[in-house]
Length: 195
Ligand SMILES: Cc1cc2nc3c(=O)[nH]c(=O)nc-3n(C[C@H](O)[C@H](O)[C@H](O)COP(=O)(O)O)c2cc1C
Image (cartoon, rainbow, N blue to C red; front, side, top):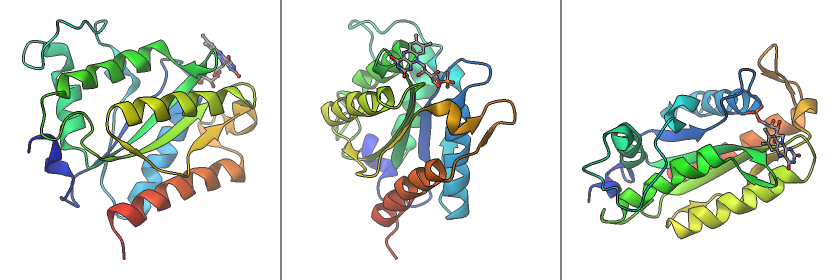
């Protein structure tokens, strides 16, 4: 049960992955805030930097044992007990860089159980306007289901993002955004570590 190993282990981290290469990325602010929420709840997490998306273009001939660049990413996916995915909304969907990263989960096809192995997935998206982040969440929901993940009901579409964060200060300025992220993390905690 290689992929299943993180599931029953409460010390296994929640993997927070995705984001944007933008220097003053709103996604980075949302991801760091989410990491702090896990910390406050005594849950371990692993926050991957946007550079984790620096991968070659996924190719169907790639194999888990032969793609060195993807090894750290696949290892992080395997050791996680749950995931938080975060994307900027590009053209009402997810970014190409993040989609390419998720394509690499295909390398876990022969794991037992395959792909995400029934693990929980929390979803965050940021957009300039009010609607595009919702569509990006919808796109990630479809991908998570295709990869055998269970999406947390409380998702966090954040838009208009510039009313929710101060990019220069690197902080969230809007209480509703903080609440959305806290609701998502609380739902994950309730499933992963019921009290
Ligand atoms: C290529 C591209 C496409 C985008 N498409 C949309 C869009 O369709 N609707 C929207 O509201 N925002 C769109 N945006 C804005 C981003 O969703 C928004 O700036 C987001 O905050 C980016 O996250 P980041 O700051 O972490 O890079 C787009 C941005 C880029 C670069």
